[in-house]
Picture 1 (tube, each protein chain N blue to C red):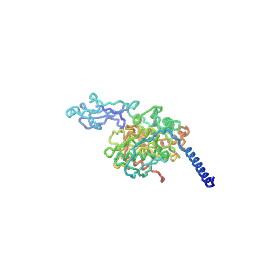
Picture 2 (spheres, rainbow over the protein chains, first blue to last red):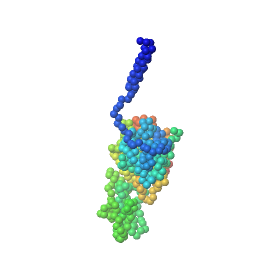
Picture 3 (cartoon, rainbow over the protein chains, first blue to last red):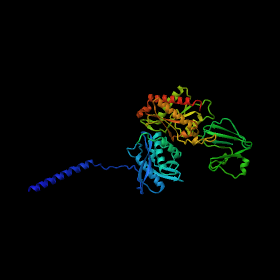
Picture 4 (cartoon, chains in turn orange, purple):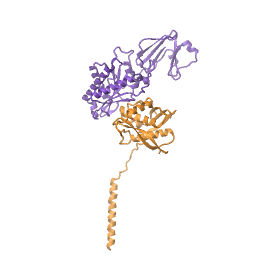
Length: 199
Length: 297
């Protein structure tokens, strides 16, 4: 066998060996597909121009609610806009690293706007049934929802929360869901809840 | 005419017959009876009570005058009940005194949750058990300081927020304190009603859902005093308004107190020495708040 052919064959064999080892390594690291229960609600993708909105994000550790700006695609229909804004807030809370963790399946079913001044937020069962119980953690959820909605939907001065379309006494044993929330009172509360140190 | 309302007793202490300079209505009285409010209106001729269409106004007039006007039946009151009484069912399980007790307690403690309503899961304990144990310790500490105290529940029984408010209001205590417990926090948090500060009660009868409005300034003052006293005793504290039932329906100074674990160790919440230390600090703070308020109810 000519020397050049032997060298080429050796290089070829070495390349094949490296490829086999690399492929085996990839297979080892690959996650085996499992039956995963999808807890996130399946929703239609949102279409519309990207807009900047204000979210009021809660932090359990320091008991604060702080405002942040995010850009998200928003539909033009007002109630759908309101729902997508609140979903953007919930997306933060359902992140496992969230400082105000909520159940992965928590979602907003609908937002209804009545006469431009009353907003009715209908949350799903997972939102309320799996919410942690406590005065502060429940208050932070409600306050951040109400303030986020009021900050982005001008004219709303009262907010009511429903769970799967029905009235409920409390969120998880503490925060009142039976009554209407006055946006002005919530705004004053949020002012008290500002973090004392820069975030 | 006798009018009976279920969601009482929220009023400003009317105890004697009120006289009116009206030819049709001479006087009226108000009493609390088994958790309901009874208003007796007396006139020289038979009287008739009528609801307005929105059910927010009741007009009382002589029967003769009423029959001359167009009939306006009340939406949900059967004709047999007029002109006698409008009598809804009493609140189940609520036994309110008929009149303010002779020696009303200074403080009424309301251990939150109870029965099937367990509250937050705090380690291997339920919030309802921790609040009850803490209420009993605080009760002892307050009595030891000469502060007359009663407990709204002293067993594992469930009460709705309306029942709690009815019992608290019927007791005519000076200060209502709801007791809660939570894992997050650093000592004792103090909460007041979230009602707008500008809201006021008008007249002698208060709306059930905003009865706290006229007492909110006093509640904020007590919450502030409690916080400063607790801080002085090196107990971590935080004062905040909260949408917490039944604070809005309490017709007296009202705060909610939340016991939390100082070091973040939730096992502390059920520790006797820890509860005793917190109850002692809180009782001292309440005594000081009471002293600062002086004779003010």
